[in-house]
Amino acid sequence: MRTSIIASALLCASSAICTDQQLPLGSSPLLSSQSDDDAPPYRSKLLSLHKSLVSIKSTSGLEQEVGEWLADYFFDKGWTSNIQFVPPRENTPEGHERLNIIAWPSDVDVPDPKVLLTSHIDTVPPHIPYSIEDGEVTKSTMISGRGSVDAKASIAAMVTALDELLDAGKVSADDVMLLFVVGEEVSGEGMRWFNDSLDGVDHPPHFDAVIFGEPTENKLACGHKGALFCHLEAQGEAGHSGYPWLAKSANELMVRAMSKVLSADLGSSERFGNTTVNLGVIEGGVAENVIPEHASAGIMVRVALGPQKSGGEVVRQRIQAILDEVDEEAFTFHCGQSYGFVETNCDVDGFETMVANYGTDVPHLQGGFTRYLYGPGTILVAHGPRENITVGDLETAVEGYQKLVLNALGN
Ligand SMILES: *[C@@H]1O[C@H](CO)[C@@H](O)[C@H](O)[C@H]1NC(C)=O
Ligand SMILES: *[C@@H]1O[C@H](CO)[C@@H](O)[C@H](O)[C@H]1NC(C)=O
Ligand SMILES: *[C@@H]1O[C@H](CO)[C@@H](O)[C@H](O)[C@H]1NC(C)=O
Figure (cartoon, rainbow, N blue to C red):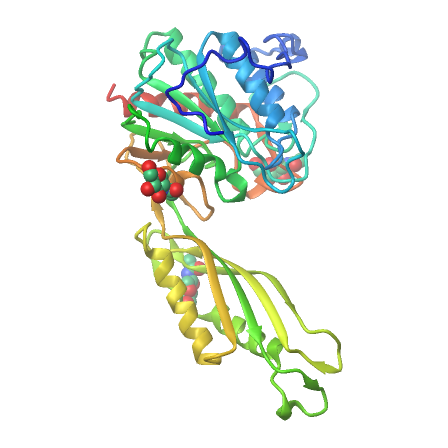
């Protein structure tokens, strides 16, 4: 079932999915260890929200619990929200739902916000429990756990930033909306679902700006590399390993082709550097003494060429040409998702800028809006066992998101 964004529903009023109650804000032990190192007034609220989100396991495909928690959270805040049910993944248990959460502070049924803030509620595996350094909480206190950076830090900071702006009367409740999607870590299913749901809606919102939350070390990204996911097969001929000239080794073809692909110039640009290839999977052959008939490989290419629409295809053709050069017949080569580099607006005063080598949901949402990519924490620890963020970085992001919203609204 695809819930349209305009079919506004006061969540949980009657919904069976809203069973879990959130921890009341301020019930966290964090509060009792508040310090005075110029802590902003929202610190305990921010850390409590971040803690609740990180504590809930939400590996891609298993996002039901965190989605329900957020739906309850916005309901309790008195915001209007809406859920979209995104189709299950292979690992989604029978009877479980995957929820995109859309929430806005006003009580209108058909919102038309100028600014959308969005991030993702899924994480990579494995789940790592939440923990916070002992002692007094200061800006340098470290918080660890899966999603503590990517991207629950962005979610907590976005929500807090909007609360601050609304409380201060700096933005109108009609102007902003939040969207938290599933499946970003696995090809962006949640955002694609949201994107497609706007088609056919009578009054789709037409955002002036969309702010995407991903770890950029609180720098404003000017864009990120494009991507190409490909699968290759090499077909040879089996034979006795003592007589290689009577057969054709699929492994040898694959190794020669991949070696050329890895060292080739597949395209570069000043802003994004070189296109790079990760030979992520390689398999082939059946035994040491048999010339392999079959080999396969999986590659992920980080594309430094634009434009977004066709830059990936240019790189695909270059790889195809290399395969043809090695052997015109042996290879089959299929690429799925493909896009060139993605540009985002980094022309805002007061931010350091950066470019990212990773993919995001930015290319999965289409429209003529200004795009920003910004968030706390570093990608360098994001998918690893040491994922952590400091309280100070979370707080800087709250300020950063406020600035971006105001900039997007022209204030
Ligand atoms: C890009 O590749 C060229 C060789 O093709 C190399 O000389 C250069 O250092 C690379 N640039 C970066 C930023 O890695
Ligand atoms: C977004 O939705 C539009 C239809 O509204 C569709 O044409 C487009 O292909 C979608 N984009 C992506 C990246 O899925
Ligand atoms: C915490 O993250 C930083 C990067 O922000 C990293 O350098 C450090 O090793 C991590 N520490 C631990 C204890 O995980």
